[in-house]
Amino acid sequence: MERRSFLKMSAAMGCAATVTGCNSGSSDVNVVPPKPPVGDEVQTWSSCLVNCGSNCPIKVFSRDGIITRIEADHETSDEYGNHQIRACARGRSLRSRTYAPDRLRTPMKRVGKRGEAKFVPISWDEAASTIASEIQRIASSYGNKSILKIYGTGAYYGFASSACFDRVLNLNGGFLQFYNNYSWAQQIDAAAATGFSSTSGSSLTALYDSDLFLGIGYNPSEMRQSGSGEGYDFLKALEANANLEVIMVDPRYTDSMAGKESQWLPIRPGTDAAFAEAIAYEMISSGWVDTHSKAFLDKYCVGFDKASLEKLVAEFTASGDPKKTQYLPYIDVEDNYRNYILGEGKFVDNGPRTPAWAAKICGISEANIKSVASKIMNAKAPFIVTGAAINRHANGEQAMRACYMLSFLTGKVGQSGVSNGALPYQGSLNRAGMSGGSNPVKESISCFMWSEAIERGHEMTARKDGLRGTADLDTPLGADTKAVFALNSNILINQHSDCNGTAKILEDDSKCELIVVCDCWMTPSARYADILLPDTTWLESNDLHKQRKYQCSTYLP
Ligand SMILES: Nc1nc2c(c(=O)[nH]1)N[C@H]1C(S)=C(S)[C@@H](COP(=O)(O)OP(=O)(O)OC[C@H]3O[C@@H](n4cnc5c(=O)[nH]c(N)nc54)[C@H](O)[C@@H]3O)O[C@H]1N2
Ligand SMILES: Nc1nc2c(c(=O)[nH]1)N[C@H]1C(S)=C(S)[C@@H](COP(=O)(O)OP(=O)(O)OC[C@H]3O[C@@H](n4cnc5c(=O)[nH]c(N)nc54)[C@H](O)[C@@H]3O)O[C@H]1N2
Ligand SMILES: [Mo]
Image 1 (cartoon, rainbow, N blue to C red):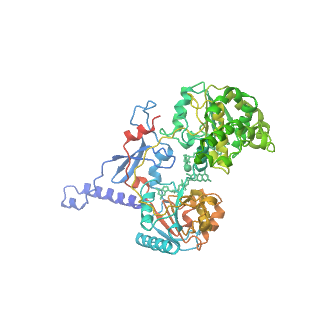
Image 2 (cartoon, protein in one colour):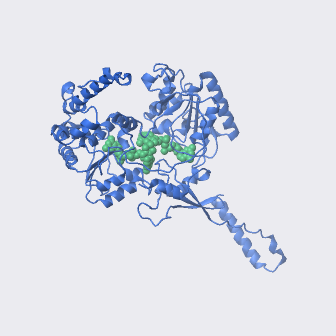
Image 3 (cartoon, rainbow, N blue to C red):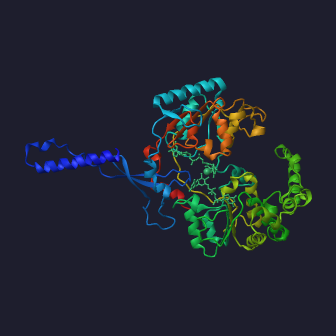
């Protein structure tokens, strides 16, 4: 009901009441319509499902099906460890989000050129039958590998969630899948190459026993803000350990600092590898590694120096195991970390990774780099974390690996108060959902390759393009992407790289012939839809979620 008509109606009702009052006792009294009873306010539990991943529990109050207010959790007496899982501003504003006036309300189809955002409303029946006939046409003309559902993190529930559309597309013979994610792709591979998983660092409670924290692009107070996130755990650890020295390396001065840091080192974005390598140079060239951590490196690591690689070659050769001997031709004992950092052997032309060399690249002074290096060497229990921002740059994999090395160079990984360099454990509520069925198409492309797949999907292979699920590395996929489903995703234009280049690819509707977008709002990506579907938000849909008592127990460190 619009506010104006509401006011008119209440004015009319007020008048009626007055008239009734005047006529009380007369026989006309019953002509006044009875007021509809106002329902009681009821409270239900839901959770905030924005993709910080914390999934905070939320109390939703409503009356007659209309949300009246939102409250965050305050069910416990709030000792840390059994604390209230208070949502951040995003969780608390879910009522405004749900009732936002710019919500999409009806299915629409494109009438202008692709990207012009000229749409007309259509019925759900027309939307459904158009999508049905288009995916059948495209599958039979180009094959099911030409249909792709791209990455999207706006909703993990309900209509746009994987399950519903996966099911439809699977029943149509399947669709090309993607692997990996925009958040962590490079760091996942960098961590695997270093020997662990990218989110398997020590829990933040280990900070209680540490004397030095080095956060490189680490910002839990902004990325995991609520009571269930590491922002709070980080704060509590700093409170509990007053002796902890906190050094933050970030181009921005962030909420994770805000006076809590001992030192902020602003760095040029994308240059962390140079910073880390110069620290490694200090640790190795000073002889500190030889005296303090060489035994650890010899025992647990491979590739630090020539001797460790020679040992590996001898071991592989002696084993006679083809699974190992197949790698022998690729092992170059000169190609080792120590040579690389010191600029020796085959790396003479690179030169040594000195602080003077790095300072010019990363913008942190030589003196500050040397000081961080000596703090790491002198710390009893250094806790080093490299945040995922470092991986979201060109060559992010190598930058992550460079930073991860610092923890191993200390030789203290595994000791109390020390971490391995990876992100601390991130707790979150498990969400239940229905199954999308099984997909007959087994090939998958990297989540980032979808715009390439529109241009030259037919020639992509495992060897050249990282295609997965094919037996032969050189077998081409054989299909360009002809249909794209962007569900709860703003990746088409906003969140991918090279927006203008991507827009050009999408504008040509002879390349990708069908774009379906499902969102709650008109976004840059939604403008490129052929069929645009409005979605409910999660407070408007029924789903399976756990009760608070179960949710909270999953968060506790
Ligand atoms: N330039 C740049 N690009 C980036 C990043 C960056 O830092 N900088 N970060 C990368 C990372 S880590 C990620 S995870 C991705 C995120 O990229 P996306 O996965 O695209 O995430 P969002 O843009 O948060 O949300 C996607 C869409 O979901 C919609 N949405 C919200 N609620 C609902 C709902 O209930 N139903 C439906 N159907 N839609 C809904 C939103 O309106 C939004 O358009 O971006 C990546 N791209
Ligand atoms: N409030 C909020 N929280 C979120 C999200 C959100 O959209 N809003 N998105 C969620 C998602 S999907 C993800 S993947 C995570 C991402 O969370 P993070 O991976 O932590 O990503 P960012 O917040 O982009 O970056 C972390 C910090 O790194 C800094 N930084 C950026 N580039 C560099 C660099 O080159 N070097 C160094 N040293 N620092 C750098 C940034 O200034 C920032 O303070 O956050 C999640 N949480
Ligand atoms: Mo992300």
